[in-house]
Image (cartoon, rainbow, N blue to C red):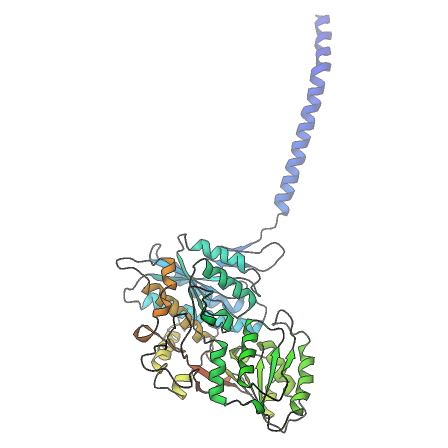
Length: 515
């Protein structure tokens, strides 16, 4: 027995002691690994913001497609986003298709946020109208918000999400809005249309973000509510009768799609001018202040050096730089001379801009621009064709209903910057294309069939928009669209001047683009 005990202890020393050590090491390793895993789990940052929205690595922006009522952290959007959420919640699965309104919801610019809120309000009113006054027409419309980032830098991520939604239960059938004519938005539209997703641009006006230029269609399935910069410049010229010897061009160098094509259009209007165009170079993000205010102070000296016959300044730039330029002109030395600044629709952003020195507008200075829409266009200067007061009256009625539940409230509303009106018309065009594409006996259109509807939107199939008739040519561009000429006022807001037309006159009653 004693010998057996010694043997047992010997075997224990040979086998069990090392085994226990190995087990101890394994347990220690497991505990250490578990601790590391726990620490990682505790310290892992949740980058989601809401359903469909998250912060990409290296960014604090919440980007993507919000499939629920999410306001992207913008207090001014909460009411209208809540109204959209209520409308979406009442839709039964299988009865609707989705339209995404793509805008830079996370921009830090208060001016841009005002415009985004107004455009979203208009889109919602068109959604509400389509769903409640459809007279049984199908499908119903679900509206979602797509954010590619403040400068559009996350456009590819957003485009990927939107594309995936075309084959899911979301049944996405169009992307509307887009926002400004920037290089990032140009890439987003190119990729969306390459994937055969129909796009309806609300406020894009750049000529190179349109089909039909030089006979090419680089964006198949793109329709636009706003005229091109060239058409806006033609309308402006027919209104102001700009001549080469009386105008000076100030332009953004190197520019972006909007400013470049506006510059080219203005340069064509004053070909042969005795004055060298004056460039300025803003930051890459044109919502930033940069140092251009210094450049504009210098340009005002050159403005005063021109002949006394010169009374017009054509400005091809974004709204931040326009505001700086106006403020600089307010302090020019030749305040006894009267000047008119003529520019594109980007000036509408200044309608409620607090940083604009409106006292400058009392010093022999007026600022007039081509607006995308204005509430007084069809009452103060009614035209025989091209639009009517009835189209705008329908929007007025919807706005009155939205002052209370269940349609509203929508938050602070304004019409004179034109953004609510153009947002409304954009979604109305989207709904028109979607419902016209529904096959006989069906309820949901094929994705690519929606974009095929744009060439037929003319004549009796036009959209009688609140901004005027929307009659599209075979490339999806509006033909002879009404262009309200609007003036900034010294008291704040804007004043309607008159309607101008790219063709020099309103379209015929048939509203059929020529061959």
